[in-house]
Image (cartoon, rainbow, N blue to C red; front, side):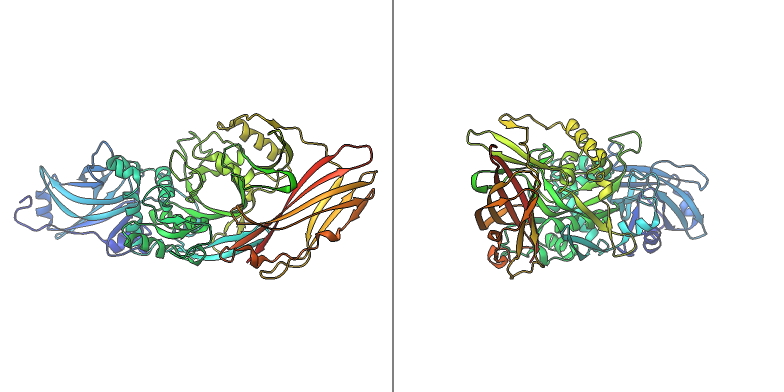
Length: 597
């Protein structure tokens, strides 16, 4: 045997170490520590016997085929108390006649995960236990370092939070339990990493890459959804959830993660954006990456990477479902980390958008981010990961096109202000809402905002010039059009609407108006036409009108959306203005009225 004459016992000091490493809420029965900070071990053996074992070494390793070249294995001697150590090292901290206490330190860029710990003497080795190593936002050299203790308490240690849903003028807070310190959650998070496709293809390389929070957050972004792997949640938006749990019924992440784990990595049904984001927040906080859940209202989904949301209108106001859309709201996660892969300075360090909702593929996988919020603010769309997509979510222009009979299309108008409103997250240390819109974009209508948009277009590599487009918008008469909601919209009650028209021209105008109302999911997808009206109105110079023809009785209960958290009624007005001696001037307005049901 490697240790003749005595039995070697080791005290891992789990409770003391875990408390010092802010992991005691997870467990005090197993050793869970953070990288870059030392933890203590006590060898329960008399000093003479311990000295007789000199030179005694410690060995740590994680993952399959661990190796020192991949930084998944380290072997190091126990040094005197005053010796300097780099990387993995151990130094004697205290001695007595019956024990020796050693402080073990890990490097600030060590791979996270479960490690085996053993003692070595020559060619002999003996296991003395296991421990889990996590990211360390308390350590200044760790890429996840967060300077403010109040923020660490909120974004790492807080197990409860708020997720915001609803609409830009009716924001609804929803309490959520993240539960990242439930004892089995950490093991589930590590299992998530172990079954990700990259690990299944090359486990030793994947484990080696787990030193990097950029890599880990991107992997978890993919693994929270089940679109193309053994991920946690399947998404569904059609209202039919009879074979699972409706997304709006979830209120905590732990139940979802446990169900996935108990079903041997088979996906849980069902999730939508806020559920995906909340589960990702749980996994990131559990592994030590500071993060928060963020909601963007009037969130664009740009499918072709041209930084615009394109709507198309045909005769009689027909507007088929386009690939691009604007969601009432969309929820993602911001994770805090450095980005030395993008700049040698700290230019892009800080909050990064990481979005687990499966919307578009990124490098062949349904994941998104991490995308630096600072890059989004400045329109630096040439940077990884997925900055153009997130930039469009918060700052795309909505462009309405008229489809002509010859197959060409004419730009009718652009809305530069609707997308990206009231971007919200829970405030630090309270349950108040904090508006962080200015982290993502300069004030709408400002010259700086337009300058950034143009910079984003210039940098975006995916932009293409498509034929058959007229970029010249037709001249617009001095006419204002507005749909006014008379009273509050209530589910199951009729809608009381008023159409307000006004002409500032010097000649009379005759307006031919086509009104269409559609039921639209919160994702911007139209599911039914519920009402239409066509009529003419005469406007006198510098006069307004409130046509009676627009009086309507729309029944929201007939829209087929009883299971949806929100309903958007989209109103499209198509008009032709004539004045004596003038040509026809076609105009299109699109209005959206949001209803909570």
